[in-house]
Image 1 (cartoon, rainbow, N blue to C red):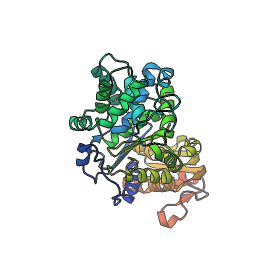
Image 2 (image 1 turned 90 degrees about the vertical axis):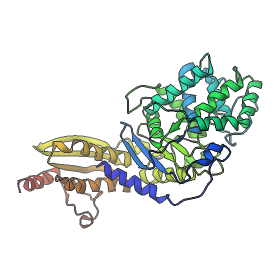
Image 3 (image 1 turned 180 degrees about the vertical axis):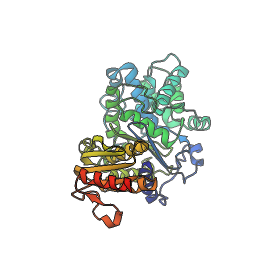
Image 4 (image 1 turned 90 degrees about the horizontal axis):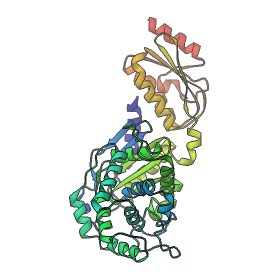
Length: 425
């Protein structure tokens, strides 16, 4: 049944495939050489299951998506008070590479702009630049669930053209924000921005944040829930630079973009998203990536202010009234996350039964995405030689039985009786 979700995600990706607006990040020469047509979406559930669409295997550099993870590492290593003494948490309303600090505090305004990100690098406790970089590499890799590698060509390109960041670093030193040599700090910063990732790496890194610091693929606790809470809070207000307001209103997920074309987005407790498309808008955000995330949020009900509804969407009970017949009883409100859970649970357990009954009689509300996924379960089971039945007395999933070639039953007993007749036939 996971293919039902994958087809739905493919369709959303295809809605934006023909968009050609934007431009490559030509101010970093190596980034101006990437294929402008690359387009990928990866989605990780909270238990680590991955859906991949488009060019999910294509590697690109993480760039500014590194910022929240270095910030999280600094929080993890030296604590919030020490980090707050050097970096603020207020939206800047400025370009990501603005040469500025807060007028009153003389600190970077937040860790998601370059000034704050450079300061965050300096806060990683280490005796040498290489030791500091090794700590960052280990943390990123633990979040991704695999060892991430440096793109040395991009690193060299960034270092050769990083005059603006050098100006920012020396400004920070003049205000007492940087205690270490600015060039040493910058070298680590250029390296951290040059890790190669895929959209799937980003989805897994996002899912690690969604799980409160536990990587769902490896089961390893990378950091603690307090660090994640603080990091996601800053991502909500500052992660998309001076487009943060539009993003929060329309998409409603903590997120971070990078000029390599990636976007990472987190729905706490539920899933992580990684997107890639290298053509950027004037604010440095991926054009297709932003549009894709907007569609995902709208069509899958992912805005974080709808989470309270979806958190009640779960399997109420699973039982077998007869040998070979399994009932999956749902309740509450069903949005994408809940429907995906039901579909994948049925798929995972399908070898254990000959017939499945999906009982939606206790569902209060359902959106179109969940309706489409659940209505496809019976057809998917039939294609595998199994039988599927739907208890849907109010017609909330199947509004037209002829359209879906599925019979709705009023009670579980009616569906069990039909299943027994069919299995005897």
